[in-house]
Structures are given as structure tokens and as C-alpha cells.
Length: 395
Ligand SMILES: *Cc1c(COP(=O)(O)O)cnc(C)c1O
Image: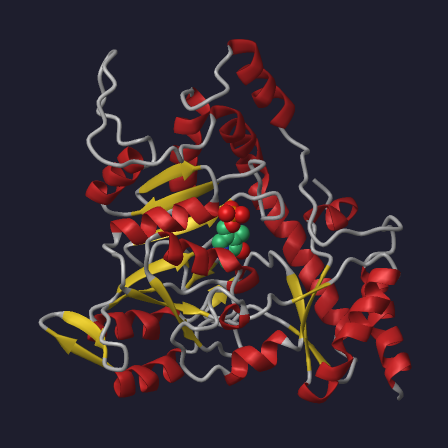
């Protein structure tokens, strides 16, 4: 089969899954089919649109209940959530933080906001997340623990934390990463921005490290317009997170006293109202996304040269974004495939440019990144909105 025929067969397989689609099918569209109008209207009617209001409290409580985390603190976006997680984990200026090179730029930016230095780690094919076995071998070579602190022998800097990310909602294998953190005395912070609704060995992601960050950006599983949340099971850290993200204001009836340099990162009530309505629909979105993934898997199964990214056997994934992984010899044809799918109105996107190749991070320390480099050239995301399966659900 020649390349054009192969690409045609990929397009045909995707279209077979989406018989009723509109001429342009976005990658991931927000879906407002519940109480969004009612809750947002009540904010406007009552005037509680900003940083105080019942929906912020309610959204935090409902997120905690859903994820099983003891505390959830809603904030303005996922990047801000991650920044505060790192600060509260004790990341300081000049520290290094281990993060996957295969991630959205926010993971590295949050590290940089703390004055710290991203240290890039390779990924594995199964989950697209951090390769624990490779990381362990690498740390044996470059890291030592001195007086309870992990130090990079090559740079002399402290390595303070590890930030695994659950790519497209597929949980990374956390147990070996937790073991590494134990050995090297690293704090584990989960970038769970893409994994609301995903669990690892039966426990919702975001519960495995000291703190975790969620995102409710417009393209995520649920959206608040823009928004995020900090998850933690530690009462002290929860109180600190709430304080730091509300300008470190000391509670008082009228006085404006702030006891440190805080951040204006609290999620406005208006956005939280949207979040409460979206969260009510999350179980249905997840059912629809799983159905869509099941159909893609079946339709793509007969095709050579391509595999459909599936949840790892230890996990249940939210299937936030469906992904195709091209066999290595086909990497050279990825852009032609993207061109054909997008021209056919099937919005498709490559993986992010690996972070160690971006100009602001190209001097940062890194381990060998063969798999990240290879995957970056071979992964294609295809339309993944839950409403693509709306007409297929009965209730
Ligand atoms: C979306 C996302 C974030 C946070 O994004 P915001 O747009 O700031 O909410 C962080 N990390 C990853 C991997 C993401 O996909």
C-alpha cells in the first residue's frame, strides 16, 4: 500500500467512527448541556461574580469529594496551581525539578516561576509519561543524597522535586516513581491537569504526591472558562494553599493585613459556577469519551503502521485526548497525515514540541531523551469531544 492509500485508510477509519459529524470537527470542544446557564445567571443576579461566593466553596468541596482528596483549592488556572504546589513543596530559587520533556509548556513554566530549573526526563511508549526505569538508572549516575538532600553531582544544585504528568489522561506508572522519590528524598507533585476522572490502581490521580494540580481550561475534560485547582491530603498545606492564593490576607472583618507576598490566584465565583455545573456532567462525559475511544480502537485495529494509545493495565483513563502513535518508519509522513486530516475537517494535532528544544529551556539539564524525541515525531491527536458520542447514549 502506498502512503496516500495508507493515509486515506486512516481518515476513513476516523470518519467511520463519526458518521454524523459536522464539516469541521474540533479536537476538543466544551460541552454545556447541564445547569451552566442557571448557575452563572445566579452569580449575575446576586452580584457574587468575583473572588467571594458560594460556588467557589462548593466547587472545592465537590472536587475533593470526586477525587477523594481531602482538600481541593480552586485557583485561576492550572499553571498557577502547579506553581503554588511547587512553592509549598519547598522548591526554591536555584533548585532543580525533574519534569518530563514531553509535556505542555506550563509544567516547565511553573518551575521557572519559582526561580527553579527544569531538569528534563525521558518518557516511555506505554503511557507517554516518565520512564521510571530510565530515570532510576540516570539518578544512580548523577545524583547523591547528602544530609537528606538530593544533589546533582554535575551541576552541584539541589534536586528538590519530581513532577510526573498524566499525558492525555493516561496515568503514568506512579509506584516506581514514588520509590525513586523515597530513595532520593524528592517531593512528588502530580501535574494532573489532563487527568480529572483518571485513576491509578483504583485511586484518583492527584492523590499520590504531596500536592497536585488540575486544570479546567477550555479544552480540558471539564472547563470553568479558565481555572485550576490544587489537591492535597495535608491539612496544613491546604491552609497554606488557600492563604497564598488569596493574597496572603489575614482574615479580619475590615483590616487589610497581609503577612507575606501572596498571589491573587483565587478562582472567581463566576468560573466556579460553571465548574459546579460541569462537574455534575463529568460521569456522563467520561462514559461518552470511553465509548468514543472504544470505537476508534476498533476502527483503527486493522490498520498497519499505527497504534491507538490505550489506558495502561494498572489504570483507568479519562481518554481526554485520543492519540494515534505511528510506527517509527512512518514518522516522516506525520505532517502529510496531519495535512490530510485537517483538510478533511478532522482537527488533528501533533504532540508538543519537546520542552528541552524550546529556546528558554534548551540549556537546562537533561537525561538522554531518545523516546521523547521519537514520540514527539509520531503522535497525532484526533477529535475527542464527548458530544461526538452524545447521540449514541440512551440516557
Ligand atoms: C492544561 C495543562 C496545564 C495547565 O494549564 P492552564 O491552561 O494553566 O490551566 C498544565 N500542564 C499540562 C500538562 C496541561 O495540559
